[in-house]
Length: 65
Image 1 (cartoon, one colour):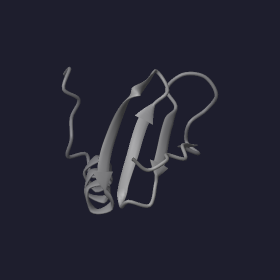
Image 2 (image 1 turned 180 degrees about the vertical axis):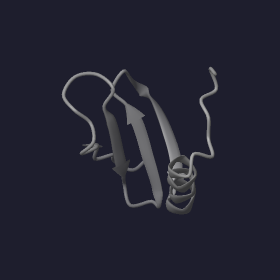
Image 3 (image 1 turned 90 degrees about the vertical axis):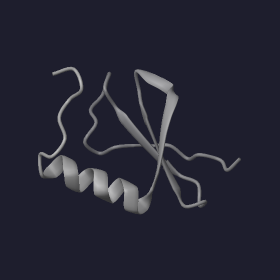
Image 4 (image 1 turned 180 degrees about the horizontal axis):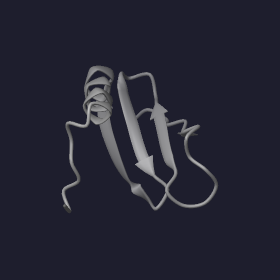
């Protein structure tokens, strides 16, 4: 398994709710949140781009609403 070099998002502040991202050169981007670091979401670059576009366009809603 590739080594993950985690970097904190520049939009994250000190404390809780920090988003970390890693890319190990295998074409897969990994995301984790500071409150649950054992849960790692994976996506390819095109999949992550599609997610960000959808979020920016307001096309996604929270599941708890």
